[in-house]
Every structure is written in C-alpha cells, then in structure tokens.
Length: 184
Image 1 (cartoon, helix red, strand yellow):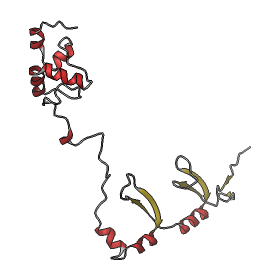
Image 2 (image 1 turned 180 degrees about the vertical axis):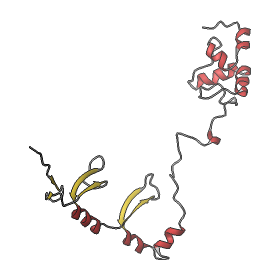
Image 3 (image 1 turned 90 degrees about the horizontal axis):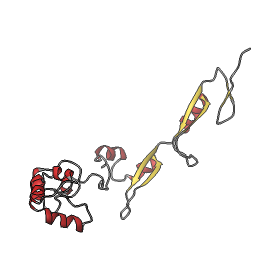
Image 4 (image 1 turned 90 degrees about the vertical axis):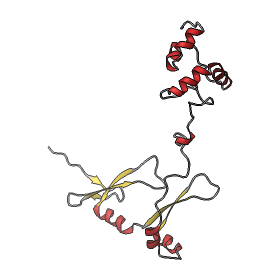
C-alpha cells in the first residue's frame, strides 16, 4: 500500500498536482507579519501573478532636523522620480555621493584623540585594560600619594604597595621596600 501526499496552495487552497510546479514564497515585510520572515507554498501561476503585480518601490531613510532617529519610508518609484524637478532621478542617483554609515558617534569606541592619556598625572594609575607604559609607571612611582588621593576622590581603587599585583604592575618594588610594606 502506498501513500500519497497532497499539497494545497496557501493562497487559494487549490490542490497542487504533479503537473503544477510548486512555488515557494518568502514574505519578508508585511503589516501583519510577526517576528520575522515566513514562507508559504503556492501554485507557480500564483507566484507569476505576484511578480506581474509587483510594485517598483524605493526605500528611503528621512533624517529630519531635530530628530535623533531616521524615518524609513517605502514609496512608489514613479512618485519619488517625480520629486526630482531639477534633473532626472537617474542622473541624480548616478552623481549622488555614497551614504554615510551613521550620523551618531560611536560611544563604544572613542576616537584615538579622545582616549585617556595614562602617561599624564590626570589619568595615571586609573584602572584600565592594556599594558602599563614606562611613562605611567614612572609617574605612579614619583607621585603615588597624589595619584592615590585623586583616585580616592574619584571613587576608584587606590594603588596599594601591599598588593603584589599593584607592585608588579607599576614596578613599585623599590618604593614598597623603602616604606617597608609587607605584601598581603
């Protein structure tokens, strides 16, 4: 005994026979769509009808003065083309400059010029990732009390001569032995 699978068009409910080619349609955007793209099965003729009925659209981001976020709109290509009155839209698109990535500055990665200079009294000794430069080590060794006072005022951890990690990180073996501080 055999089994037969019968498929129906998700659009019309018509049976899709062996003679009819099955078309797969993925819907990416629709006002009734939930979280992400969905797919349906339709008759090939139905898919071709979709192709014929398709609109030519332009997707445009509008950056309006005084607003932080752009407005994305989808519009008929002919309507957009009609807005170009000085020269043809095709010419305008060819001569237009490429779009910038984003108008917002990145908070996660500041420009090199904005980074703290840990080889200055203003930032020396602050906890940070990366290696400690010789210049920072020298500043910390020469101005330890002043730097610890600043760190404490800023609510940051201070540099302890009793902490072997701090002593090693900032090359403070000599000041630690001069002050006769025993490691923890």
